[in-house]
Length: 96
Image: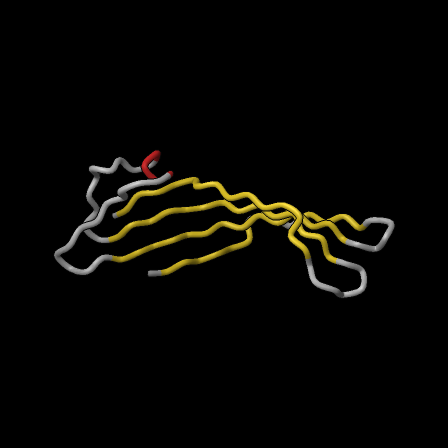
């Protein structure tokens, strides 16, 4: 199994008059689960069924791609970065 995250595009940031920075970041996640020899798998439930019917069997692996969007607040004084908003959206699923 592999689960790979990558930054998509260039993050956008703004500095407030208080010195805090507001940053918008988009990540993509690629999930890939390989199967054992002589076996099969299928997506049984959830959002993935919009992309891959439950009766579709895959002999080698299952995959899905998810898009994550974050709004982050970075304080001026090097304190902890806060997540102000977060959204995730499945954009593809299937197998091979």
